[in-house]
Image (cartoon, rainbow, N blue to C red; front, side, top):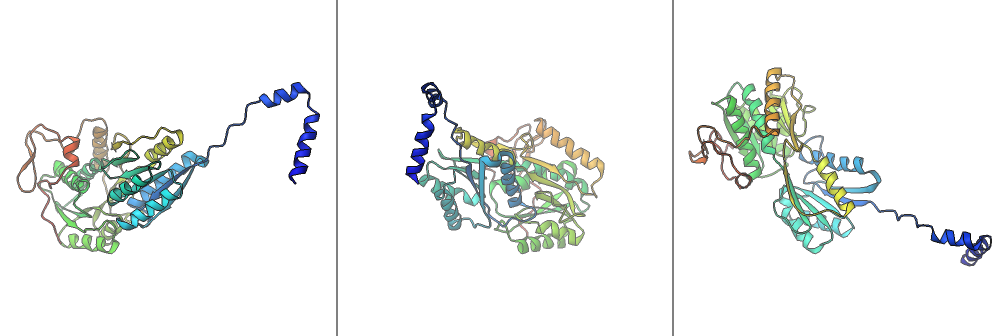
Length: 369
């Protein structure tokens, strides 16, 4: 076969004049086709219809829509933090993925361990805080949306008691509980918030039981920082109100949802994959909020009066324009729930102080079980 091919090529050359042959030889070569960027995503829970993992899955799909054939994505769902996460992240790195997104706080250390062994692979530790030359971190200012949700909850509560179902007492979660409480108290000074700690991010039966226990204690509005839709489903079942989180959850709680604090990852993920494609990816730390479009409130429920919707959206605009900060004290100090001053009058917490938050604000009751 190769002899016949060589003969055919030789014969073809006989029909070209020397000038034509020279012209053909000098023609520029066609640009090499750039292979697609391989991007991997690791999810801490199954992909459900709404919730933390759903929003990251929507981000992955946004990357595919924006970049088309320039990217090929892979995802692995329901990966436990710890040894399982390291195994999955390592497998993605070993199979040619050039950028790997690991969106869970407990993935931070496994990501760093794998990154040391794969210096040419880029890693994005979402909600982590430790960087490396090939590890970037990114998170959103969820507390901004939590404050706005607190304003809405304060307008809607009748019992002046809200509940909060939370995973772990890490700074991100404490920020959310505190901002929610401060938002409530900005319109309902008598409001209190009862917190139930679950020590797990995703356990629908446990999340549901915690919500039901709070309702039994007189709570009429509940928020949560867990991974499923179980809390809002419980509110729908009991005829109570709830704040959707991560995603718009009206599909689960059409009568229960006051509003949803949603997370938007598509633009960030797309830009980071583009950076790998273009050879301009660098490590760094991004912490974006309402102004950057990474957090917003939406999905107002049918029971929320137009005046409340208007007020919340106006406050959202104030945050975006820098006129409102959830962790700013007015003429009186902000105190924690032991009475200690944590924000002095007229002062605003710095990013560093927010990131190290280890207290619960006045109005948050001791842990409920």
